[in-house]
Image (cartoon, rainbow, N blue to C red; front, side, top):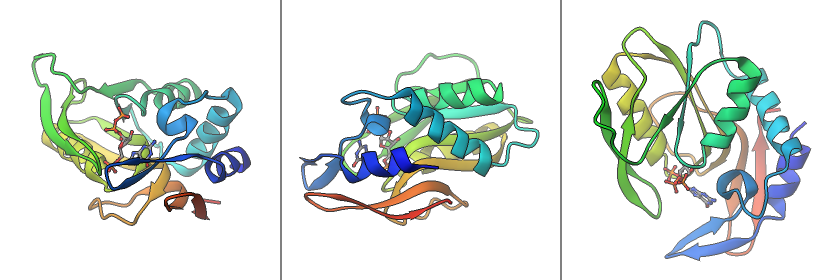
Length: 183
Ligand SMILES: O=P(O)(O)OC[C@H]1O[C@H](OP(=O)(O)OP(=O)(O)O)[C@H](O)[C@@H]1O
Ligand SMILES: Nc1nc2[nH]cnc2c(=O)[nH]1
């Protein structure tokens, strides 16, 4: 369980984005290619670890939450909401600011309303900026957040709610080290 994820992280290349040591990995970049078996391994681990009772929507963020969300949605039969980086201007759309370790922008949530019970999933949590923005957007709709899970955690940022992490890592200039797992 999680053998593919752990091995692929331990062999992931690192690049600099400014001062930020950015690891490159199939789950977080789609590069160089994403093996179905890795996606299945992650989907199974999420199904085992998340509280899915009465959950009616999965919320992910464009772009690198989408493939995980699709796999998870097909395994659980729960509909998927993709938070986008451009506005649609639909009634009820919620806009929030997102800041990561290397970028800033706006996120736009549609398709979630008061009374919904949702789970948030994403590829990685680093500064926690993206998850804080997603939580804020969902709270503004009046929906309930049942659970939050990321595949990879780097750092111990507080997102103000419990966060489930499949694999925790440390990233140096040359190497990714896996320091903990959900197993
Ligand atoms: O914890 P944080 O510092 O917020 O970093 C995590 C976020 O960074 C990446 O998204 P990014 O905005 O780079 O966009 P992408 O998914 O389009 O690559 C990743 O997909 C996470 O959503
Ligand atoms: N691929 C990738 N995505 C990230 N999102 C936040 N930090 C990182 C990182 O180091 N690598």
